[in-house]
Amino acid sequence: CLNSQGSAVMLYPNRYSDPENRMDSAPRLIPDSGWFQFDQETGTERVYLILAERPLPDLERAAQRGGEVSQRTLDRYMRSATGGDKGIGVARDDAAEYVVRKLNLRHEARE
Image (cartoon, rainbow, N blue to C red; front, side, top):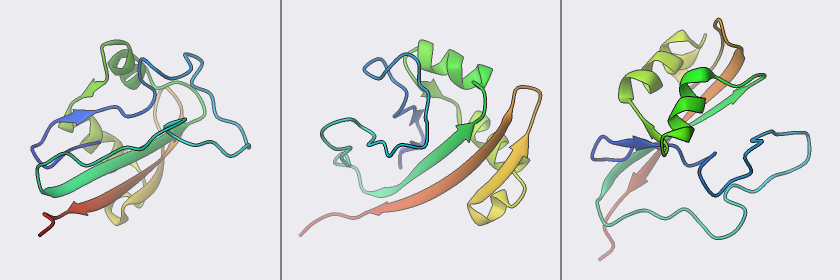
């Protein structure tokens, strides 16, 4: 998730998730329980969903370091994905083939 202040952190996997971090065809809720919530800052939150056939080394390292991801890394995944300029794309790099989807969630103040 890239928040409206410009910092990015991995929502999943994280230190609370299954260390295997594998998906199969069964439905899965992320997070397993509870909800992700907006903070008090208004703006656009950008959520990047990246699914890969094998672990992506830079994202694996980020998960092990506490989940902090650079804007540069997120941009690289979007740029390398065919059709990424439309918010969804497919790409292949040295590590794996992956699908990336970007969601823009607008967070406005309640009155």
